Image (tube, rainbow, N blue to C red; front, side):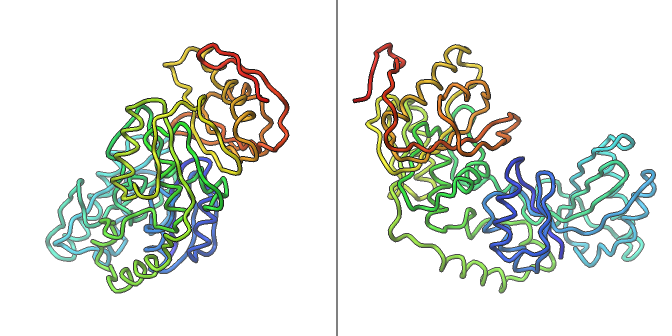
Length: 390
């Protein structure tokens, strides 16, 4: 079968690598998606194991249309009775990017009409629509005159892992957080620190990567479990194999810090909800007064939004760069920020510079390698005190 895994902009290549690892074949990188082929086992693995996908779709058919009647006719031809039965429910989700067809709700209605009319013709009755929790969710995507039909095998967006009970301002998407860790190449060989940890999302995703723990829980209510074709025996086997791969021995130190008590509390709640409080340390601490460390990996997302004045943001990023030079010798540092101008003030040359999308914000994800022997530098911390390294 052909499968399409949706993702965030900038994560396509890392998702393709993940798909290869679970046995996907004929991999094709698309815009915010990766297409591949696989069997039912691959589909189950994709939902359970892929860290950087938000939705896994099963391709059904692609065709050209001139008008809405063409859509109705093409949908009507398909053997919907093979996919779900009269006593099951369905829903339509339409995404339209076309100069000719611009009403997604009308497209959904036309698709629904064709499906129920086919059932009426064959059985004299029709299945019901349930938009909240259907047995089968059908995805209709129209780009100009090309229609792609697929089945949503995931259900609720896969970025919703279930552990983020507490929020902070501008929380990071779990799929993005996992992608940042995977792009960094960190797999637990060194301690990992998020010095501005917010709600702790990077920390939780990093731990799961280091422990080879699936991003989703085994009891998650995936949409494919309601399908007529669901193979419970095969699903249980996929879960058993994934369980065997989890490794909780020789785990690295994972630490999160934040200056805001609200963020520290949110991180603690989320880490506890994920069941990881034994493995992840959270503390209230100002980054600029941390002692620092050597031979670690730092991944963080400094503040940059409208709550900070432009001069404050510029100065903050300059101080971040100076602090890294002084106190984080021989560390790999990864910073993501949506303030592209402020990133220029870090004062370090990135060895990796990758464009990303954080929500709707164009961002940069940069790697800084903090070699030993950094030159002396003097900086003014945010409290106005001059400090110089020795």
